[in-house]
Image (cartoon, rainbow, N blue to C red; front, side):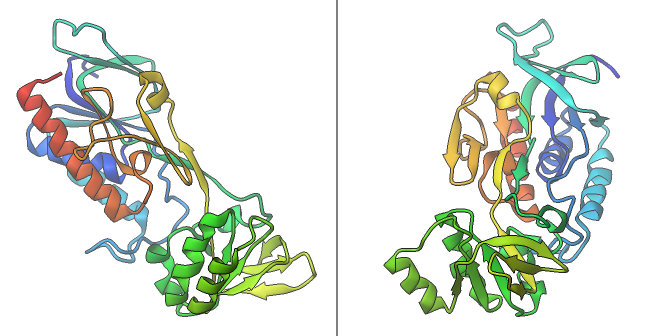
Length: 304
């Protein structure tokens, strides 16, 4: 692969990264996407809530996107894991401001875009991980409709699970299983009652069958689907390597960005799940679109 300087290197070739690359490719900018092929939603069989793609296998959406983006002659893809990034103290003679090491080679770019995503750390409940994305979910808008108004469980991880417990009755009769994570106060109990959400205090022992929850008192409760909150961590070390400012969220740290997706370091942009608390295919595509267009504008004026 040529070692000439890229206008942009995008680390992460899922929905956000590909969306950003599309904008840059259409601007005839030289782009290298480095992607190791590990999508966050690889466990889900269907994607929902994205216009024109509702119900489509997310792997199919990703492959179509990749095929369309790589049709632009100035966009290239390296299937590899990026290992290290650094900001050059002084631009080199070709105008490069950033180095990326991947697949044992050095790649240089004027701009860097992180679309590296996050890693989910799931609740340590036997049977939950095997059902993640199939009958255990994180997003009511992505999966609630398909439960066909059947009974829904929310397994609490903290008081933040109140959000799910109050939302989900619009999709089906809902039970909040406290699982010793927290005890609702009087106002919270009143809000749950007003929404028709049941409260179950017996701890969760495990999940079997499709979505059957076994409790410590010996009962097994069948559900159409289960919702649980995962904690997230950045899927790559690059925010730390670059010293980017981060924002704490209730579920984990996110890369801080401006409205145009630029990070605390000029010339470094971030988009998708690594830089926003809410995750879906539609949101990732919109985030990447903004990042790609903003990155292109920064190249136009060479402000870095």
